[in-house]
Amino acid sequence: MRVDIENLKGEKRYAKYSTFKVGDDASEYRLFVGGYKGNAADAFAQGHHNGQRFTTADNDNDQNRSLNCAKLNRDGSGWWFSSCEAVCLTCPYANNKKGFSGNGLMQWEMWKGSE
Image (cartoon, rainbow, N blue to C red; front, side, top):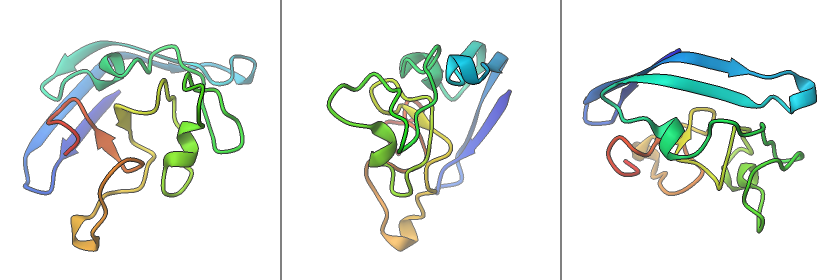
């Protein structure tokens, strides 16, 4: 899998993974990701997403004991959360022209902070 990222300043980076697999329903769609190469930092590894089960607003499988990470997202997007996200590509797009900022938005946090 390859992820190409561009921020609002037009800066581009990428992350490429030789392994990106999603388990079956019995594994609760557990994520297996590895073999990183790129210049966008390995947010999947740094955010401990590898090996996580898929979490949705109505099915809390994340490692955060105090809350459901999917419910933090502005639209309840599902993802392979650990203790919420360092990367979330299903979260709503942060168009700063609309004034969106903060948690629960699309991000690749390890690239340049949470920009």
